Image 1 (cartoon, rainbow, N blue to C red):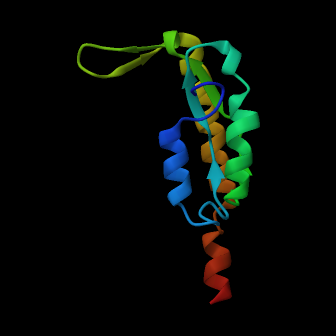
Image 2 (image 1 turned 135 degrees about the vertical axis):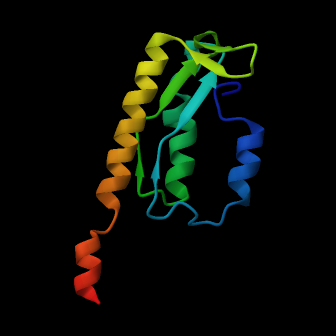
Image 3 (image 1 turned 30 degrees about the horizontal axis):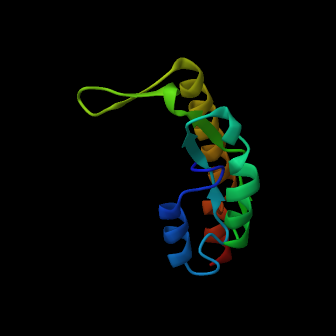
Length: 112
C-alpha cells in the first residue's frame, strides 16, 4: 500500500487485464504497508477493483505492516508469529474456497 491505496505498479498490472479477467475466480488480497493507518485500504481501494474485474469471491485479505516482515541474509522472508498465523489461516480459507468451487469429477463424468 502506498498513500492509503494500492501502488501504481499494481494499478498498471490490473489495467492490462481484460474486463472480466477474474470471472469465476477466488481472490485473496495480501498487502503490506508502512503503518496500520492503511489497514482498511484493502477494503476500500482494492476490493472494488477486484469486484469490477468480476472476481467471484473476494476473501477478507491480510494486511501486514513492514515491521512484521524481515528479509533474511539468504533472501528469504521471515514473518513475525502473528502475521504468519493470519497468513496460514487465510491460505487455508482460500484453499477451501477454491476447492468448493471446483466441479465435482463425478458430476463431470455423468454429464458426458
